[in-house]
Image 1 (spheres, helix red, strand yellow):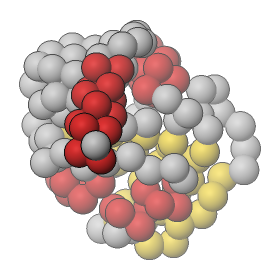
Image 2: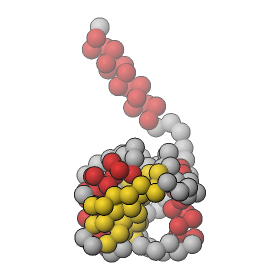
Image 3: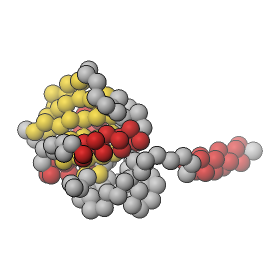
Image 4: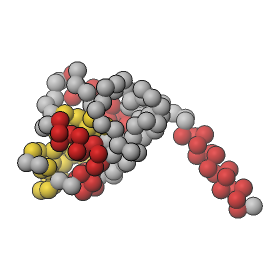
Length: 152
């Protein structure tokens, strides 16, 4: 009886995980967060994808995963952002943003692109990190479980 319950519960989770939709900000099976090739808003040409989805509830957790130093929580508000922080990695500043969901992350990325925000974006499940160099962005993507976004 217990085995049937576990199998039924697992099947329900698998079926329900396909439900719902956002603006293309949910990730694909080949990128953090699941969903299939090409999901995530047309991010073809990304240079680094991690081994699997990694989600963080706070900017501090994200900073620990990345291995940066001098983490500071920014208590100011930013459109779509649930939590914002900064830290230093390899001598350069990182800007860490955690979102309530991937829809909010997708909206923020659209605004960042439209305003030509500086840096190279690395996105993951409900988070984005801005890095100064491509080398640091690749390092961040590998450490945090994210994907380097292509410019343009």
